[in-house]
Amino acid sequence: MKRRHEQKLIILSIFLLMAFNMPLLLLFDSASDIGGIPLVYVYFFSLCMLSILVSLFVIKIYYE
Image 1 (cartoon, rainbow, N blue to C red):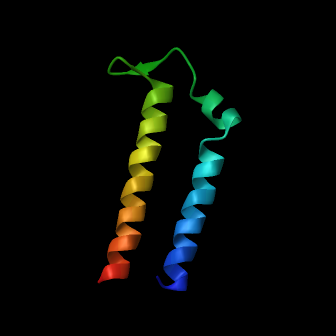
Image 2: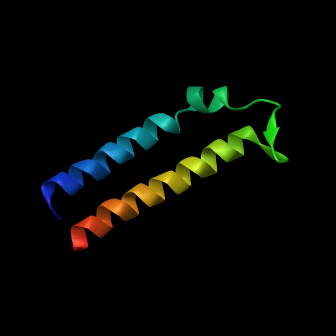
Image 3: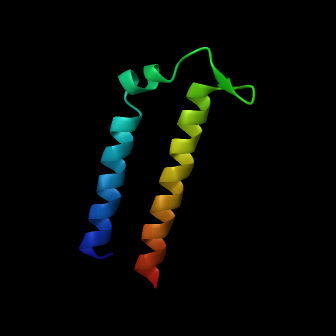
């Protein structure tokens, strides 16, 4: 894997560590919901989906 792709994945993992930090998660822990789903779940699973898509994009560029 090229060095710049490794760096992108490291930056992504550092971003995820900060995004899943407890004080930031507590900001989304409220009584409001979106379509019947609590806001903290929407935040958590959208971050998971975003990280999977970004890592897939970085890895796909590597193999081309």
